Amino acid sequence: MGERASDGGRRARITAKYRDRFPVLARALPWVTTGLAAVVVLFGLLLPNSLDRLSAGTLLRLPVEAIYLAALLLVLPRRAGRLVSLAAGVSLGLLTVLRLIDMGFFSVLDRPFDPVLDWILLDDAEEFLRTTVGRAGAVAVAAGIVILVLLVLVLMTLAVRRLSDLVVRNSVVATRTTLVLGTAWITISSLGLQAVEGIPFATKAASRLVEERAMLLRKGLNDGKAFAEQAAVDDFRGTSPDRLLTGLRGKDVIFAFVESYGRGAVEDPEMAPQVGAVLRNQDDRLREAGFSSRSGWLTSPTTGAGSWLAHSTLMSGLWIDNNQRYRTATASDRFTLTGAFQRSKAWRTVGMMPGVRRSWPEGQFYHFDKIYDSREMGYKGPMFSWSPVPDQYTMQAFERLENGRKNRKPLMTTVILATSHNPWAPLPTTVGWDEIGDGSIYHAQKKAGKTPQEVWKDPGRVRTEYRRSVQYSIRSLTDYVAKYGDKDTVLVFLGDHQPVPTVVGNDAGRDVPITIAARDPKVMDRMSDWGWDDGLKPGKGAPVWRMDSFRDRFLTTYGPRSR
Image (cartoon, rainbow, N blue to C red; front, side, top):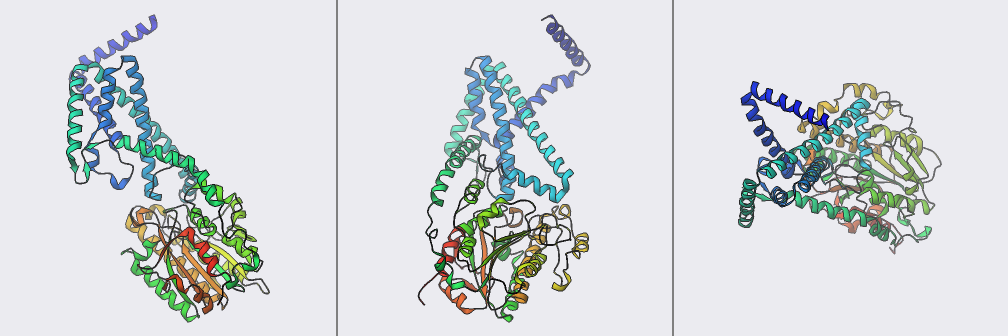
């Protein structure tokens, strides 16, 4: 007790000496710290959870939560008030961290962070950083994030505590001020007055965000059961092998997903002319090789990232829009498109998975007879940022390992083309098919290419490199089909999702192009009632279907029917 008194006396003497030496600064400091505390608290209460909503107008509003807290502190005993202010500070700090996380999710996935279902994405984010900026860069980013979170929590707690003490010490003035502000808030809210156009001055944004997040939490907790019930219903589960895909017997069917190939690539004014030119040119190449094609739109369950959600949605006929659903589906015996080809015993099912660099237990869900990941393609070239294998090499490896083999069964192949994966730098370029070899040719291309750091300094460069990557992927795929395809080749290719909002904005939707091309007119005749547009480029008015509806439509169209 004596030590505490001694310490208190020492601090008092130091404070008195400080005030004597710097009287002006001593008088100003409490006002400055109080002002900074007010700015920090208002920032925490008014910060939106999306960068496109961040503006001066959103930060110049009157939050009702601050009025509620002041009123509560004025009626509570001092000790209880301190506990309430501590809890309020920590809660506001956590809410601010959540909003910052939401900003990141909206920037990439165009949706908020889901506290139940999205923790698994942290592993994917770490892997993405490690492959793009290196292990040291990934560690530095992770450390920076941890420090930022702790800093926000500490600053917010101290700021709330500072203002709470001020309210309690000056209870008479605080009571009058709280009454005035409360009355003003009700009046402004009733009149609908706005800070700037479209942004109401009186707000309860923090409370609304908590309510929305509570609803999202309940939805996430209940989603697993609802999804399991949906997955249990499957009209094709018991279909006998002899009635599956009879309209494609003897054909080599390729399902190719083009990473981040979304509607924006086809319709965005900055990209559509160049991408459209490639689609027209490749359409001509395919026609010269005897192929015809039709295209439409599918609505993906994801955007910006999460390719695996789109892959599993198309193949399973289930709407898989979160990782809990993905885990549930891939651990089940759900009947997939690949499984249909395999069950018929008329095809060998193959997966060309250049993005897979480690064990992939989910692969069993798709019922592949053989999976070639990036380690099994014989590739001796460099990674292009995230993408382990260039798309043209992937298609050449498919020709060497499977399609070009003699006396083989018909193939059903799923190809995941990864070159157009974010961050789109550096990019490979197309070479002659006989020049690819073991991929060593790509070392010089990577060395001459741009770095992600260079590209991501400017959103315009990001859009340009994204567009170039899509052009490369489409050209690699369709050149392969034109060169190596024959009368029995059927190509189904589509995008998995739209790119990040940096490329197409926050209102681009989730539609992706899908195309079917074949030389056999009977294959194309079967889908004549789909209403798709001729060629590789779907028009604005082409049909738009949800991606989960494709499996059943495809199995029905190419199943047994009277002719």
